[in-house]
Amino acid sequence: MSDYVVRVLEEDEKHAAQTVFRGSLHHPPSTDEEWEHAADGYPARRSFGAFRSGRIVGSAQSFGSAMVVPGGKVLPLAAVSRVGVRADHTRRGVLTELMSAQLRQLRELDEPLAALHATESVIYGRFGYGVATRGRTVEAESTRGRTLPPMPSSGEIRLLEPDEMMTVLPGLYERIGLRRPGMMARPESWWRMVVQRRLSLKEHLTVAVHSGPDGDDGFVAYQTSVTPPSEDRTLTVQDLHGTSLGVVLDLWRFLLGVDLVRSVSAWLRPLDEPVELIVPNRGECRTTALGEETWLRLVDVPAALAARSYGDADPVVVEVHDRFLPENAGSYRVGPEGVERTDARADLELPVDALAMLYLGDVSASVLATTGRLTAHDPDALLRADRLFTTGAPPWSGTFF
Ligand SMILES: CC(=O)SCCNC(=O)CCNC(=O)[C@H](O)C(C)(C)COP(=O)(O)OP(=O)(O)OC[C@H]1O[C@@H](n2cnc3c(N)ncnc32)[C@H](O)[C@@H]1OP(=O)(O)O
Image (cartoon, rainbow, N blue to C red; front, side):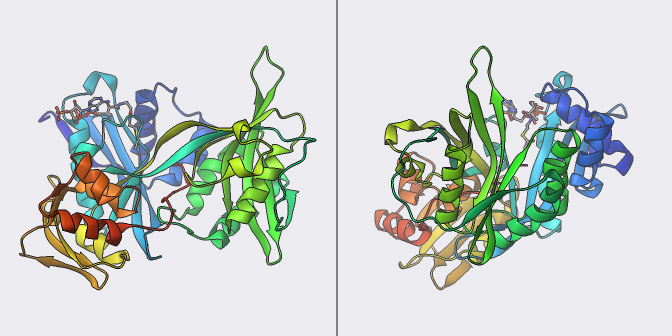
């Protein structure tokens, strides 16, 4: 690794970094038009490059966002992406250096959380990331022309014109709010990278907005496709959010009734979204995949632990191990009254990646113990930890970056 230099990029080096990233994913370089929409998504000052003989061979970048944690507090979040190392420089510690530099920067920026979407599950655990939200891919058959189970409807649906999308969606997403642990804020540049880019590239994107008694309260963005030789059209959901479950299910009912569509497919939906209950027969709605959504990193463990709320139980002392950010290592007394560092003997012990799995409520301390990711020195403390860390519903993000 000594032949490599890892440093923050200059603005005019970002395009080359993007080419390395895209190449690592087996994609061609961005066209000028694509780059126009992608360029400012990840600021140069938050973008690291690894250089060998003056040439960029690896990249890891982030943009600033915010994530809601159990109890409703919203914490600064680094959204990490564009991670790639050129194929002729892998397995020499380049990513390890990039991750170390990035984590150090996020500490300096006072961002207690970092999140990413991984291409492979094997990569990020060693850097302290753990899967903190999951989602399911849902496929449902069209209900067109058939009688649906009765359900109270909560409003009306209208389609947006393409030129309305960028003016309506960002404000509507903000209005909907960060409704469940794991959801994140979308900076304006996110909308440009995702929606404006599609519109400029003339991709056919349809957006339906739901309005209830208080105005716009939900939306879905979707595309449709045919896979020859079949004539059957599939509708694929790209983005779906609403202020309540009723609004979200109204949007689903709309999608299931769109003409000339045989089935509706949506990926990484919340695990508890009950689409099965709004189709004529449960069997017409299947979970075809269950997958990792957010990999979360507690960059500042004491700040992150102190920010979330806890269930009703006596405190537990949790010892955290963190190889990359040793300032996080140590024992914390965690309870409904708050969190403090302590020298007391630990009841439970776990690495920081397992703490990320526990943090938003995706898995319980007992499950982590049973699967060998947490050591319980006191079985009673394990039950208390289950009650402390539990949350009402599975966490979910719903934002891809
Ligand atoms: C958030 C995102 O952007 S996700 C996109 C991630 N990028 C990709 O998947 C693109 C294709 N892959 C790559 O570019 C590279 O393989 C990377 C970035 C995943 C890893 O980069 P490298 O420089 O090879 O990682 P590095 O050498 O630091 O490896 C660190 C450790 O992780 C292991 N490792 C890293 N990536 C992998 C992998 N894909 N499969 C198996 N092991 C891996 C290494 O073997 C090494 O283990 P060790 O410490 O026990 O020796």
